[in-house]
Length: 264
Ligand code: DGL
Image (cartoon, rainbow, N blue to C red; front, top):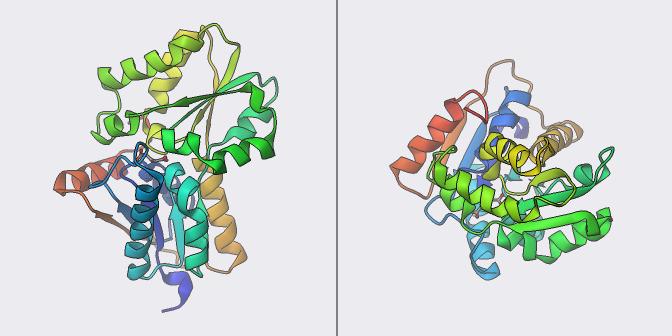
């Protein structure tokens, strides 16, 4: 089969990457997609670097065995630890996501910016060098959100437990001059409406929300075009879901894909 008709492989530690996949389907509906969620091992964010590295390579292998034309790392934590290794290993394009601190720090009237991400993402050198590259890092407030992806993985994106968690993380900064918040983990994209609501209450005004998923989807589209890999069929493509978790994980993944928007 010609490469352009092969599926695009997406992976994440669990359901988080579906937020990126859903946006990709909206932008490129004629592509075929395979999503691999490592729900059986999620969350990754509190695991050791070695463990995350090994699990990420395994996920990559699962997708490569399916025959894909592009690999999308729809997980900030996987990116930070293993993107280089995956790029070295495979000769197809490997696209990744990382926290959208640049648009947040360079937006007009940008002041202090909160970054919510997993402890693994925030502690890694890759994130530190991103901060050095972008500059203005004295205006960043990093909040490692240990356990939050695990709560989201349960599938109720408006639970009191999650609302309380987010509020407790933001309240210590209520007297800071905050202009924006970066969603630095693809799981958190599902609770963006809740984060918006709680941050408006805590800071007394609305703040800008910055999510790297939109830039990642644009990048997927750009690279497919540059390499003549866009699927030129006029029909809607297919989505195949794979998971290392149980049937409940797969049911939840289907439900998320069937819902109309991230806030559903
Ligand atoms: N969705 C992931 C991310 O973007 C990781 C969440 C986790 O497994 O802790 O960082």
